[in-house]
Image 1 (cartoon, one colour):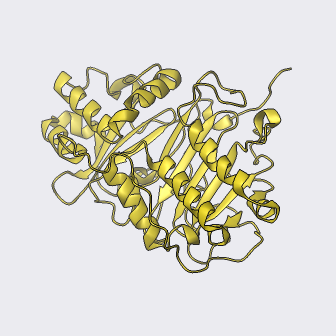
Image 2 (cartoon, helix red, strand yellow; image 1 turned 30 degrees about the vertical axis):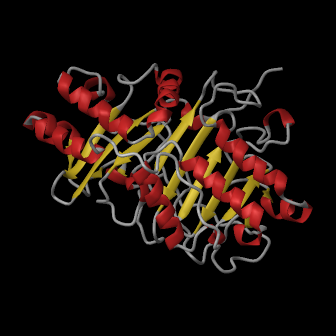
Image 3 (tube, helix red, strand yellow; image 1 turned 180 degrees about the horizontal axis):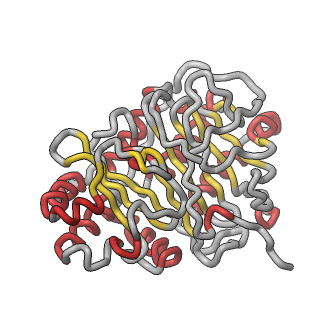
Length: 360
């Protein structure tokens, strides 16, 4: 049987777009008091990198010629005529600069600069996740190098700067806390199509599918009444990860209504989502989540039908494992779309006042 699911956002077009999400009705009460359950130990919590990526970004900047700076360096609040505020843009498949001329493996950069860029990039992840990142890049972009581009915003050492790398299934940032009250320096994207565009139910070889299995294990812990709250007909668009704030209307079941063991598993879900990233970014994300009231202010939703893009079933293989789900609070959004392959959009801040690039 032919699988006719489509993913128009992955066919080479840059839809960019954080779009203002539509509000949807949800059943159930909102939060009670914040959870007193302590967070599980984060991956690599005691590790200290030889050189922080921020230090390497400054070295890279200082090594750039004036001509190089003209092509890949921008003012902190640079606005692109077509793409809006460029620093905060996020998309599933895009290039922040000209990939043919300025990809990170091109002769535009010296060998030393190429090595710095590579060290910055891998320094944003846990060392033990490097092989998974390399596999994702190989499967989606033919490997690290020719399909990734970078840009630098602001001036390293001045108090405000940000390094951004983009490509297919990739938007990652290094900001040294220049982007105030925002985790990861701003919204990020990751994904993987391990064995082709349309993946099978168990997503063989997908380096991020274990995150969905962790969330679905929590769904299996829910009783019948809880499942009715958690299951939602139709998700928002996957790129709709702007913040609703404290008065937002969120899909799914309030985490505050979960039992103690269910809340502990919800924390394990968050831990699993954060595990690929360096310890400082993990800690910052947890700190900002706690600042907005913690997981008790969030809702968890599993989607029973697809969004407007007509991606097809959200339960590939009808195996009872929901492929599209979302964890959302006032200024925390983690949207996981596993059909027809994995797309994940994440946006975390200390409050909902953070302005994002909302270009559609």
